[in-house]
Amino acid sequence: MNTAVNVNVVHESEAQRQHARVKIPAKLRYIGPNRETFEAKVEDLSAGGFSIVTQKSLTQGEVYRGRMMFVIDNLGLGMDIEFQVRSLDSDGRAGCAFQNLDQQDIATLRHLITSHLSGELVTMGGVLGTLQRDNFTKARKRGGTNHGMSALGRLRAVTFSLGIFVVGLAAFGFVAKSVYGLYFVSHAVSGVVSIPSSNITMPRDGTVNSLVAVNSQAAKGAPLATFSTSMLDVLKDHLDDAQLTPAKITEMFGKQLTGTLTSPCDCIVAEQLVPDGQFASKGDIIYKMLPRDAQANIDARFTYRQINEVRPGTRVSFQIAGEDATRQGQIVSSTNLLPDALSSDLRVQIKPDAPINSALAGRPVEVYSDRGSMNWLIDKATAKGL
Image (cartoon, rainbow, N blue to C red; front, side, top):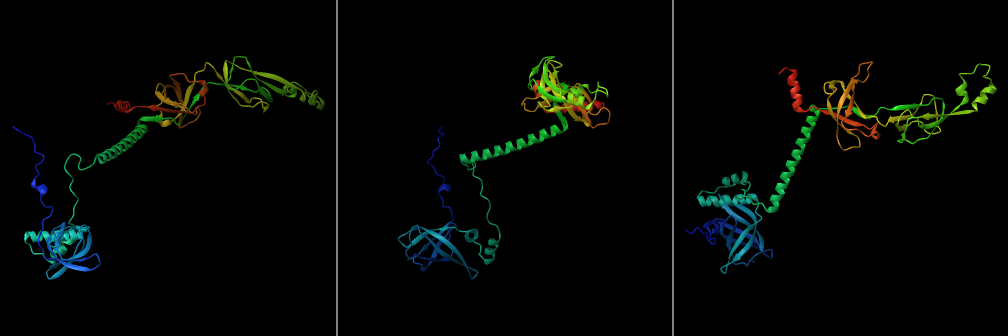
């Protein structure tokens, strides 16, 4: 059996006329090339055009303006039209096509043609009723898988749909993350990298001259700075009234005694609080020293309502300012921020899983405890005895 398809076969619907032609009594008045007015009888009429017989010369392909006249209920109905001459016969017959018809003119033509074909009587009331209603609708979509869209149009539609999907997905992720962070994550009010430090204070009133640089290492007993103080300040508590004569005071005030500040441990000079040559009072802190073998911890503040989420032994995550990586640690103590009074804040000390460089001491830290949705629900159910 031969199942080959003959592609040269054309269905009759593909070759038939696009518009039905009817003979309706009508006249056409049109303006010629020299602005003269001519009148001709309309031989036949369709929704796409008409034909006339005229002895006046028309030019094929030219566009003319005119007015088509109909007689309905003894009343004249006129339509201002533009038409193009498509064909000219030797007997004076001209085939014309409508140009730039508006919706009301199209509706009127179709009503006249449809009523004439169906044998109905055309009345002025019917024409007015046709003009008052909406006679147009959206065009049907073309058949096929691409619905008449080009490859570029399909690509543009797919790209737009994909963009909307990505934006919606991002918005959903942002909302989900915000809700999760609000209900299942406990954030610290503040946090800082802390290392146990030692303070070197001024033993007497005087001036200081440093011997070491900041961030340098100092062995136990190594000199850190020299200080100068007045002899009067040293001996004033050991002299009686007979020895405190004006001449003796002037003599002792002019003499200076020097001393040395030494390191109490194998430390790193973290900070010098009094510059060289500046006067310092007795007891003022000159240096802050950090033991080289000391382990850095994290001190954080949580609100009192988070007491159940920051108990000792709880695992937390934290990120030090200036670092991209997130570190892990464990809470080792949780105490009231003000031990001698009521406070709304809790002070929490966190021991990191990995050592922290002592140079990061004083850096701010973001601390949070991720409880997890399942663990939180399990804890709630256990508390209720379920």
